[in-house]
Length: 269
Image (cartoon, rainbow, N blue to C red; front, top):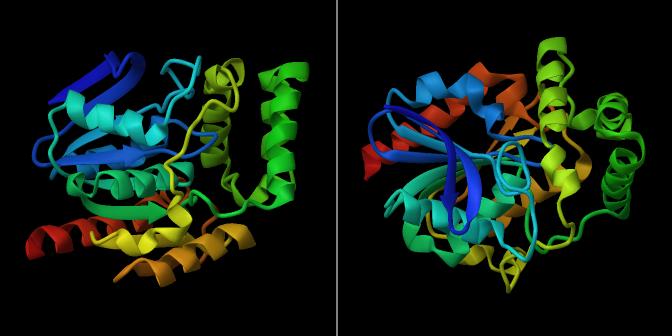
């Protein structure tokens, strides 16, 4: 089964792709990306699962941000729309933060978390990272997204996030360019889970696998180690030679890690 298109879910338009047969599995992309970041994994995952991925609000082909919203509530709307009672989540970067928030708000719906270089709600972001993100927005508005995208992928600061290999680097840049809806939307409208996840990780009871990228920034590695320490029974795997997007840079190795964790959970349930 394969379904692709824009659907109105929870009052907003989301570009959603559904493929495969079997129990549900949801994929969440990160910042500067969209659901196409998972293209290398769909063929394998859809052999065992009904894979659901979507462009988050303000990304890709989904609607832009026009008012207050919460990513974890958008994910709940996805669950409701497809009639899902429970599913594992594979999530990257900011998508990892969404998955964590969702697992805290709706633990009954989460079978398992596989978090790849995830963010974490409530963990203080370095001032430099905040400044660079703000500067990126300003460049897009002043110089256009084509010019800003070129500067982004050549930036020394963002070198941990931009793939080194030319093909994957080009794919990452295209996702950046396809996220024009982000820069045209209203900023500062997202409302995260409260109380913040940073102090609530002990509440998570589902199996959690954290994938750390060896060439990631020091801060992102710190987040991974904190999650490993604070979430009961969480496991940590390090992909030493990868940057911030292991699933994009080293898809075969990442797929093997993810499928092993998913199968282990299925066999134990």
